[in-house]
Image (tube, rainbow over all chains, first blue to last red; front, side, top):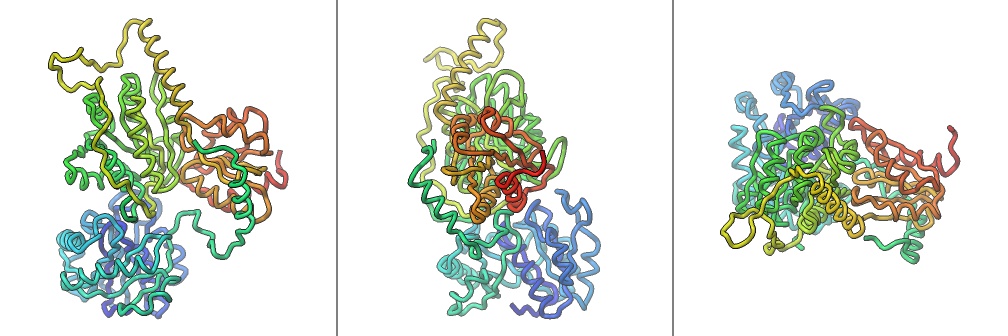
Length: 250
Length: 356
């Protein structure tokens, strides 16, 4: 995904996938040789935050700007001063991971004067499988409240329709149609469709630019990849259990 | 069923409550369940319901008492420290036999603790955190879809038995996102509640809702009635799930989020040829003592895994009743056990423990 602007802000509805896309974009930019800082500006989500990946990202040369020490684990609206320095540094690619909807995006508002003096991209991440952005009207409302909360104008859309582990190419295609319609109605360009990397080969016919992503923040039971495992012993034990049910549930 | 959505556990619980006919929700925000009031603050006005942010958790639970007494389907939610504040109200609600749903998305304790997930409120929920001989029905979902299913069930059980029902989750379950579907129809014909205080028009005896009974004979009689009800609930509503327990030599016992982790560990053990299985209580009260006890006939060892310092393990020991050794592995304070840690514990039992 090529974005010309040095400052790239990912905003959107709560739970739309901003953090995964911000993490993936930061890694992508770093791989392309850019000096990257990732600003975790999400002060509303207590879990699954980009700051949880700070060590791993630092090892790849990416600076994560977030509250330090135990404040990283607090449910407090802490905004660190380093953000101002990063936004002003012309050498730095700054990726901003914003909190969801208008309550989350409010934290970005205080930087609006600084941002307006620079070139920035503010991309709205849209998952049409989320309850309040299933159609164009919902997406338009989301855009309105976020622009009002941030005092900034959105510059583009990123389609990110998914059902987590149950995502199929069909679900991505259906969602993309809705986001394309939103793009026309709202007059905002569709910058890319984020798709899980393993599904990308099945979507190459799409005219939209694809941004393949790896899912980084997972619950603990997903840490082992299922596809690499020999499940024969499990299948056998399951079959035995089905043949000789120990006890009917309930 | 509607089409699938991707939702956080907290949001899905809110939507499931709306579809179960809940139109009154009283709560005070606390991490990690605040998405629930956030969601219902948006959703309740759409369906003609009310979310009222109370001045405290204590106020919220007593609003629940009032609304339930008037016959409404009503819910409150909080996380561990806030649930502690509600205990007096819960005892009154149980004593007055009022149906309602209480949600605990538990976090690390004791005290103010941390905002990370925990299961250290098990004893408080199942053994009575408030005073007096009372029981909550306690449901422990392990996925976002099961949150939806058990929320629907919670409202029905509450009305059926005139008893408070707690949905016991943890922060991780509340925060994680999974695909869900909801029942299509919003419940309209809710069961009649002839006992409710809906205004007296001289057409029936007066309904009085109260938990005060000064005459000891009558209070004892009330307690006997409650105990009979609890025994009936234990007979009819005990729920659990078994996974690969048929030939299991090591039975892992875990509920909620930890059951998901334990399932991964059981599968890893099976891949190594270890006969491991998972027993997952779905109702924490009533506890599936009999079903778990039966596994002692085939199992050699039991391993309880919890996100606390050892609470449900007491019930596992009661169920196994000395027939087999019961071991415990736990993490606390908001630390989440990994599948690798649980696998290592299973292997220790399968290959013989090194330590005494």
